[in-house]
Length: 98
Image 1 (cartoon, helix red, strand yellow):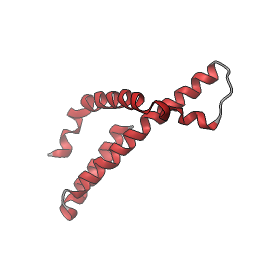
Image 2: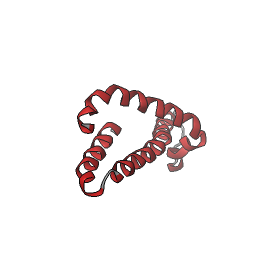
Image 3: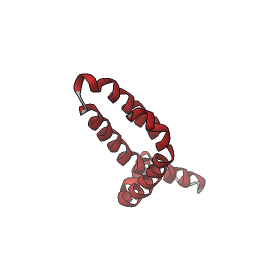
Image 4: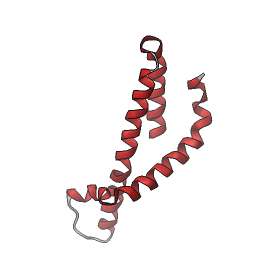
């Protein structure tokens, strides 16, 4: 998912750079960074709810946001995962920067 977001932002940035300069590249990476930071605990909340459903425990809407209680741990795990995927797909993003 994030590879697609990065690709779309990079393509839009490349298209707008002759008009606005390199400003849009920084805006794109900032938006992607914010999405990465917020998506890690939110994905953890989905797994917390799924685990509670498997144990047949009651689930509330607020349980989806339980990932923010351990924000640092889930953020580190999520960013490590995202970084490894970015390294995997880095050779395919080469054409954007040329």
